[in-house]
Structures are given as structure tokens and as C-alpha cells.
Image 1 (cartoon, rainbow, N blue to C red):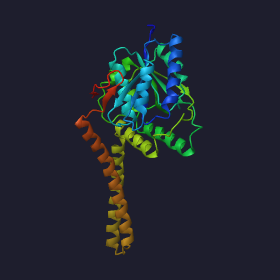
Image 2 (cartoon, rainbow, N blue to C red; image 1 turned 180 degrees about the vertical axis):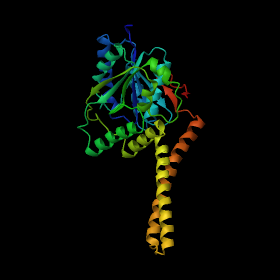
Image 3 (cartoon, one colour; image 1 turned 90 degrees about the horizontal axis):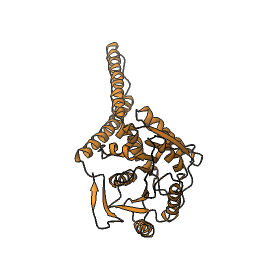
Image 4 (tube, one colour; image 1 turned 120 degrees about the vertical axis):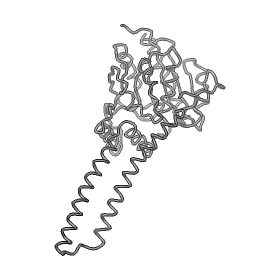
Length: 328
């Protein structure tokens, strides 16, 4: 079936982007206009700017953009809930609009190549329900960032998580996929690992990442590590199984050590002093603390899931600024 009159909602999460947004918004608007003029998408397409509880003038800029051009719409979260929840809020808002056919999520900083959208939309028109934007290379990254990022993808795949290598959150998702994805009620979300779980036909578009238009990155090393750990514990239970395996191995080694000590005692040989004992105790204590930490992380996630708290709360919309709603 040929897909025509496709309505696109471009979802752009923003957090303290008062420097970058005035530069990137016209770029997004021009690309939207080019796609409309080319007949790839319908004139009713929109740009959804999601303010993730910014502390600067980001929301004021979003309001001004909406007032000057109806193609811009905005959501404001009541507080900062993180990048993943901001993207999710925009996607669910597009789904609940009742008019959206496809969404494309892209960061506000202008680093992702917007020209890749043309190929994304074309692949959707050709039948793909999800189109992943994948970086073709990482030449602009430092060695440390490139090594840790690629290592993360390898570790995730080794742990059984089905994620696309070198893909972040630049992707096209159809409304059909979003309707199924809305049934995933996890509080701890990791979109780049959860979207493939839905299982619809997908394709890939490769692009080169640019320098940030303005401002500073809001993803320092600490946040990147936290996101990586959340992704691992949200998508795989293999760390628990690895702990079980490590426990069995350590137990076997300890059992062998006990037999050795008994044999030495029977033979009358003197056992070495306290240094070796302290080393073994410290080693075992460290292993146990690490294991308890990983198990505790899983228990904490179970606790948060059972609470079933809302993942985000929308305090304002550009078309209904005093309406307060939240989606689960």
C-alpha cells in the first residue's frame, strides 16, 4: 500500500538550550518546509519542542517560536526528568494528537545531520516502520569517548541487548510502532534498546555527526556512565547470572583452599601468616560488595517499577498553557 499525505512530527528535546535553539530552530523549520515542498510529507506536519525543565529562557523561546509560526508547538515538563523521558513525552504527545503518521526524534544541538531525514522518510514510504540514524564514523570524537562509546555497544550486545551499533536517539518511528510501544510501561526507560524490542520492520540511514551549534554538552561523563548502566540493567539480567557464575567459581576456589589448608595441617606444615589471610578477606569482601551493589541496583529498579510513578509531567503546552496533565 502506497503511503501518501504523511504527517511528520519532529520531536526535539531541549534542556537549557537558550544558545542553541535560536540557531537550530530555523534549520529544523527549513528542512520541514523542504520536505513539504517536495511532497514527502503533508503541510500539517509539526515541530514539537520539549522543554525538559530548563532553568534558562528555553521555554520563552519556544513560546515565541510558536507565536511566530504555527508549525512550532511546545511542551514543558514541570521539572528535569532526563533526556529519555523528554523524548518519550514528545513521542506520546505526537501519538495522542491523533493526526501524526510518523515521528523523527533529534537533539536540539544541531549535531545530527538533518539531511538524513530525506532518506528516513523515503525508507518509511518504502515500507519501513522504524528507521535508525547511525553514525558512519566517529572521527570528531576523542579517543576516550570513541573507545568507551563503542565498548558500550559491544558490551550491550554481549549481554544480550538488541541495540543498533552507533545509534543514539536520532530515529524515525511510525505511529503504528508508537501505539505498540505505548504498552511498555517501564519507569526506567532506555529508548535505543527498547524500540528494537517492538519488532516492526526497520532500516538504517548512515550520517556524519557535526559539531554542536552553540552552548555546551549536557551529557558529561557521569551522565553517560549512568545512562550506560541504566541501559544494561534495564535490558538484560545477564549481570545477575554473571554474579552467580562468579560466586560458583569463587566458592570452588575457596573449597580447594580449605582442602589445601587441611592437608597442610595434617602434614604439620606451618601456614603462612596473617598477610595472606588479610588479602583473601579483602578480596572476598570486595567481590561481595560489588555483587551486592549490582543486585541492589536491580532491586531498586523493581522498587521504582512497583511504585508506577509517572515518567514525566507536562505543566504547559503552547496551545494550552494553563492545562496540566501527565501521561503514565
